[in-house]
Amino acid sequence: MHRIIASLLGVLLLSITAVAQFAPPKDALSVQATASVKQVVPGKRFDLLVTLNIKHPYHVNANPASEKFLIPTSVTIEPVSGITFAPPQYPKGIQREFAFTGGKKIAVYEGKTTIRITATPAKNLKPGEVTVRGKVHYQACDERSCYPPGDIAFTLKLKVGSASAGVQTGEPQVTAQSGETPSPDSPANTPVAVGSLSSAPGGAYLQKLQDLLSTGRFGIALPIILLLGLLLNLTPCVYPLIPITVSFFSRQTSGSQGRTFGLALVYVLGMALMYASLGTAAAALGKTFGFQLQNPWVLGGFAVILIALALSMFGLYQLQLPAGLRNKARLREGWLGALLMGLLVGVAAAPCVGPVVVALAAVVSGTGNVPLGFLLFLTLGIGLGIPYIVLAMFSGAIRRLPRSGEWMVAVEHLFGFVLIGVAIFFLSPVLPATVYKWLMFAFLAGVGVYLVAIDKLAKTVRGFLLFKRLLGVALVAWAVLIALPTQKAQGGHIAWQPYSEAVLQQAVAEGKPVVIDFYADWCLPCKELEANTFSDPRVAQAFDGVVALKADLTRDEEPSVQELKKRFRIVGVPTIVFLDGSGREQEELRLVQFEPPDAFLKRMAQFHSAAQTAKR
Image (cartoon, rainbow, N blue to C red):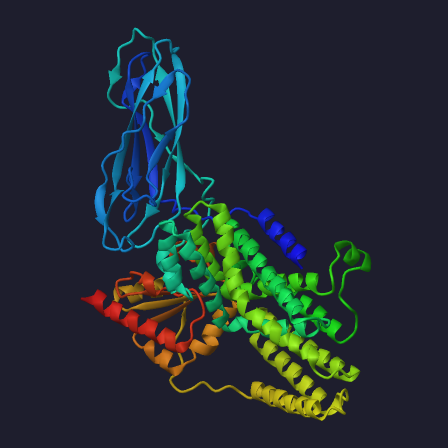
């Protein structure tokens, strides 16, 4: 066991890859490079002027920055043969206080700022033309949000005269408009507003985490990440992982509790490894788990795997490595299976917790510490997996029940049905609602009838036979409830309208608050919000006087969808945006995950209060 765990840890260390990366807004800053002379004269000093044009409402950190963890704006010049550049002379910053500075003022640059660099050409510099290349490294922020750092490259061509020529001052000979190039720290992507972190499940911990990382208190940050992973188990669409876990551990061969505990650790390690790998990969690709792992093809593939596992439960075949490979690896039955199942359930959880991983990626990207980023994602996965260690120990106890052949076969069949049900559940985002409804009805009714009237296994075990029949009756009753026409509770209807720029502008003109629900057809948390939260009559009542819009992001490749995502800084679905009567977003209320009705009602109460304040 120790050898296996050591090998897995080695794999983790070799698997460390680039951390989540995002880019600053492209329109926040432009750069102009000019010279103080029209013509460079060998041996005569001149100034290189790098002018930053910072668009409102953005600002960048001054140099030096007010705090060690802030990223100062800096200019770097590439070496030029025959010209020596002195260190840049940075202007004094303007003292400003922002929502994220905790009441403290910091030095920033706003509007138009010029950085001066003195250049000394060699006396033997030959006449002709030289090209000066450089870059500006900066971090842009607005009133509430800070973005990861970026680079803007610039190029300036200078004419070099003879040593006998006089220095000609006046308008510069060349003004080089900058071209924005992503730095290694931040490839192109959509920025993530810091203000949205507190809106995610466990968002208060994410906000605290950002503060801890920025001040270097990593020892405190890791337990918070672990706690956040535990909180993710409260997400409803994580619940299907429970029967998968019970099914796997109940089928393991007999062994000590120590071995079961070891299997559970490897199982959770597989979950954590999948989290770390997929989390960093999704961030590097500029996509979230929500957009990548709620893809219909991915969900369909996962459903196929579950059905394949279910068929093995019915005895059609056994899933295992060839004997030669098992012997060569010196693995007892179950170790490799535990790791692979852990990897699999990590994928299963991804559609539910993707937005939280994106928020964590936004925090990590600002540190520039790749090993730390991987460790944070790994810790998040371990936190999610801790409850499954207890569940695995409970599931292992099933092996100690009376063991007649028919008894164990019947138990395996039950778990096979569970896996098929979970597969159908994960197909729900990609199936039409009517198809899913009647498919689930047929499944539940069929299994119920089978357990009550057809299955003859273990009929001599009275307690188990009674359990099967009661379960069968319950499943048939559930199927009947699904088939019955649904009736919405009175007053439980929200007057949603398809997103329209015209409707939005009209609402703003009339001073009405607006709620925009960004969703996709394949989004599981979106469906949970619709079924459990928006259907609540109290929530519907809270929407009185509010213009409710739904923005469909299902077709991510369409230009109109990309435009909406860029405008509202959407990094995943669901995302609920709250705009007051002036059209200003209340960023602290932004929601990026499923939220039950009671919590959402508190959010709506805060929104109404903020909207009233904005009117005054």
